[in-house]
Length: 445
Image (cartoon, rainbow, N blue to C red; front, side, top):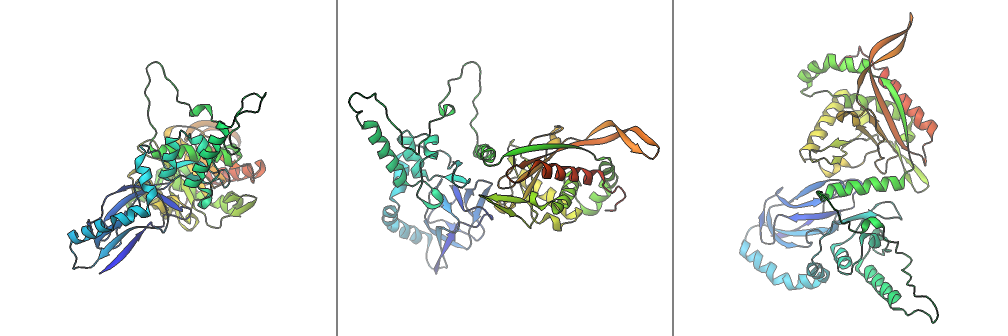
């Protein structure tokens, strides 16, 4: 018999921690290898954690809603035969007092009936998402500290996280400031600690009149909202537009789509065709495939294309095609369809949404002719393709100018003006337009 530690699994290149949403097993329960034990969430995607072995759960080390670093032991499983489930439960119960003493703060969390989301606004110091433990959030709730105040408390924990000590120090400082009597002859004025910003008006609950419906944001929508605001605060957004004639591309797809589906078992959409052209231009202008680290530019050698995908719930997620430049059109088509289906059925893995270096969003899917997309951090550019419309346009022929019905499309590029100027942004955008326009209508599949 032996005890196996179940650790928080690695969930992607940039993901350092995850929130425990729900335990599906309890101490004393028997589990089989690969059986799901708990559900977790990151700022990108929800996931399930399976058991790594057969056995009986003897200890669970974290509560629901706890934020746990990657690699941390979250539960222990005893393997081997010879000990019954009842014995395991007895061992767990006898160890309970010691476990409770070890996690005193957990009891404090239970005492305060407040369960807000575990994700908060960006940390101003490094531009990442700031996380708060349930203990800190519950203390804040019981003491009347708003989220806007909490965001501006200086944290001394790992990665600038606000600890119990930090919030208690802030409360003491605030109390001293409010209790201090004014000097004789001076007007009464209380100065808040320097780290506390003025509470914005939108934090104040609004009283609504008339016939309204109030809808609470789900966890994913809250994260999308925070990511969009964070991106606007991080990057200096500029958007450029171009128009392109995609007649050759449209006619070629129409000609081969039945044969392609019969041969490959996959429907070919416009998305892999757009990604194929996009990759060629990224190779010519590699600065579009980079990120900014304070005052350094990190140019990515791997080309990992994110594709914005709408979910049935109305939310948005961006699965990533890794090393997209190493795939042919068939490979791109299978990746696009596979990731899109996984996204819509809730089967994406955490790694499927990490590591993107450039994002494509198809706003034309829902009829928009153009858009001004928000950069997906930490990338520096995102391209939107609009709806393809037939229009009469002037074309040049050997016999002179003439008017013809062509398939036209607007494309737009939002880029980070900190490192990409208008000249490079527009040059890249027009290169993509030319790539689409010059599509080889005679190519084979």
